[in-house]
Image 1 (cartoon, rainbow, N blue to C red):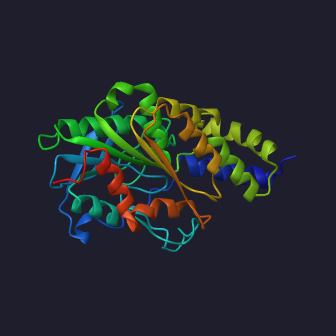
Image 2 (image 1 turned 135 degrees about the vertical axis):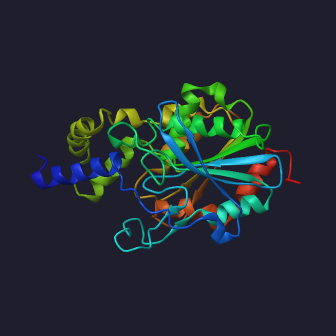
Image 3 (image 1 turned 90 degrees about the vertical axis):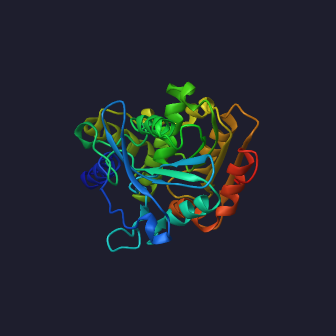
Length: 306
């Protein structure tokens, strides 16, 4: 039997997923010596998307999105009150600099209700369910710019952003024609996340998920099953490098392994970060270790940028 206290905890979890706090964009590319433009573009359902465009020296561009509750900068987890994910900062700027230094232009953007982007209906975050529209809009933006319209495109998507990208590929596979490769960091099956949260809250898992479902549905109109991203991996149509924290306390590595196995391509890769329980360390990995990221993108663009 779920107690009133446990019901309140599940309600707070549903609220955090559906209406995450809009956290500060704490850093900007110029802190790392990067030239950049503040840019914006619109989704098909009218959301104004806020982004940074950082020009590189070649005809290659990487489109990057983010996890929740982060934004295009990262996540200020080192600040008081934001230490719930390990107490450290997630900073994407070193990763952007490494890509630009390697010749790539970078478009980094905020998903709806995050960073500087607008809100959808009722300011609800769909944790990837609606955000596929931002993914398509980012591709349209790059293909519409005079200086990038003929560029080769790669993608870097993570967590909510990876789920959004998989949903976009499932709905509109034709939009990804010409995309050369993707890195997908920590895509997430929704039910698994709820189960792991129930475990931490010491709520029986099956009872907890059953109690969470109507609370979440009333807030969002969505179900837990709407966030089962695993089958969508069968729609991935570009070479993909999956990256996951093995002992992630908010997920299960076996979910990501299942996604990897469903991808109907031979050109794919999976790697696990060992020795940490913190999911957010996976988001920092390529900022701290950019060589493998650049090697993956270079390999799918015919070698290093010139």
